[in-house]
Image 1 (spheres, rainbow, N blue to C red):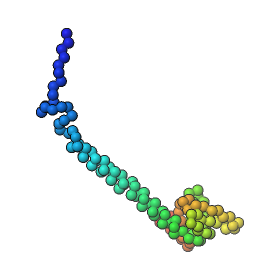
Image 2 (tube, rainbow, N blue to C red):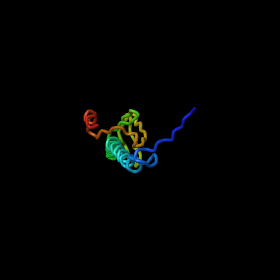
Image 3 (cartoon, helix red, strand yellow):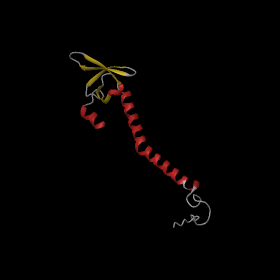
Image 4 (cartoon, rainbow, N blue to C red):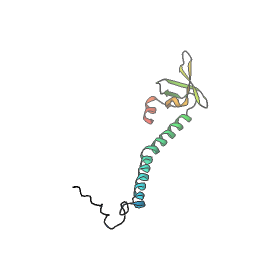
Length: 123
C-alpha cells in the first residue's frame, strides 16, 4: 500500500518562490558584480591596449623622409616619400631598390642620426 503525503508549505506560509532571496533583491548584487567585472576588464585589458595603439599611431605619424624603418616582415629601409596611407622605402641605395609599404606594416622607426641601440632602448 502506498501512502502519498501532500507537500508541506514553506515556513512562513506562502507559495514556493516567495521568501528570502527571491525577486529583485538578489538581482541588484548580481548586476553590480557584472558591472564590476566589466570595469576590471576595461582597466586591465582594453585601456592599456588603446594607449599602446595611440602611441604606435603617433610613432608612425612622426615618420619623415630619411628616417629608417623596420617592417613586420623584417625589412629595413629608408623612407623616400611619405604618403597618406603608405611609404616609399629605399631598401638598397646602391641599386636604388624601392618598395611601397602601407603604414600599418611599420614595426619600429629610427630617426636620421639615431643609432639602432638608441631606437631599441626607446622601444
